[in-house]
Image (tube, rainbow, N blue to C red; front, side, top):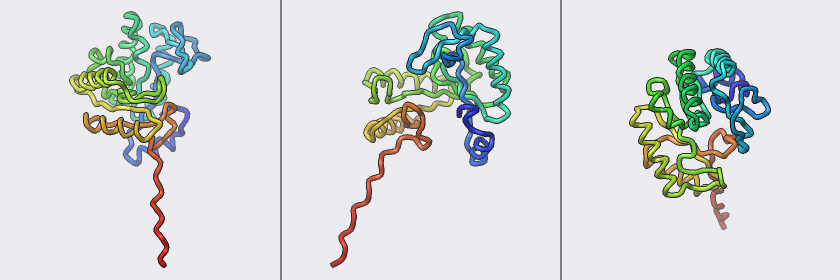
Length: 220
């Protein structure tokens, strides 16, 4: 859940029903109109800029948010880790930041969105991994992955399991056929998945429209 978008009462309502609620935390990118710490590439699809992870000001900003939100949430969903993988200096700074987050959060649950190039060095720090766009994508129009793309995400799944971390999937669909494809593959590979739209605005996920039952003929 995005901190600030949901009140404490809504978070606690979920927690009372056994839901483990994670706060969203973007580590490698910020909104372009709030890019005080950003010095890197512009991500047009999300209107964000890559953060300079070596900035002590950015580190303090993350620390303040973590210390504030850990009192409400059960853990954190760490996004945009892969923004740092093209630069060895930024990668080292990202690894340091994630380890600091573990210190700040104590036993809280930490889930990473992909970031597979970092995970081997974060074993024991991260609890779980989400493989976003595991079987389907919206990036160039909603579609199932090609055979080569499926092989790639299948290998990611194997890597996470070898690291003995929890693993989940997230898929995107705009048709019942795409949803069935994603759900069937996830079931075959034994990984939980959630199918939604690009905006993540479907709280129950993407569900095909329910067909009305055929009307019975009135008795003569």
